[in-house]
Length: 268
Picture 1 (tube, rainbow, N blue to C red):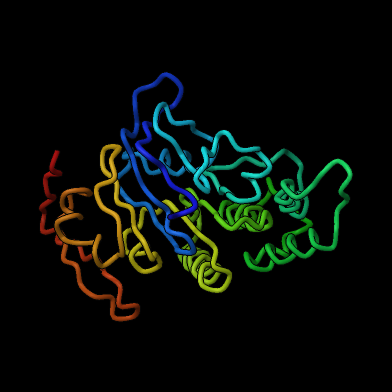
Picture 2: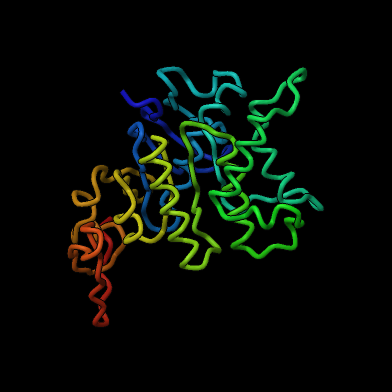
């Protein structure tokens, strides 16, 4: 059974309308899972439910068979890391100091900074190509540089499960590819369990082992990219007429929109 999963979770923000209803989904261990779907379908809400950011109105999020929200905060922080959308750094903080904050779950009142902490921070900065930025202030960096720094913060936490909410936002194509290649390397080499929300369906198909497709707050399909990314699903979920061919480089499904002035009606 997967370490991280939801069972019949009903998700909402405070007293607002229900965003996701009766969602049951498993996050396969040691695999790279990508959540896809149109804007407003509940992708980020589902991702947040896999952390402590959203408590289900009913149902549950489970980590190792126990309610995630009933486990100690530091224990969860050592198991599940999160790179949220649009994180904000404290004013006047340098890159090295921000990345070092990723080690907070491993710190204690009587536990000083250690060589292990130093190694983790340095490795995270090297992996994301931000070591050369270590002495700069975060608020003077470009959007793409900041995103890579935040990725380094998440990696410095050294959790076996890492959740990424639209991690390629603000990144040039080169850095999008580098980040997704890094995710795949961390998954294959270090057996990291990864979950990312992505908007680019072709990137999802190329890099994911497992895809969760959502529409209107519901999970409509899960499985390997070749099983999920079909012409029917693209039409029904995204409202796009498309051909699905095999990517000549990766062998993964490749979506080719058939515009011709036509946009499919999304099935309700």
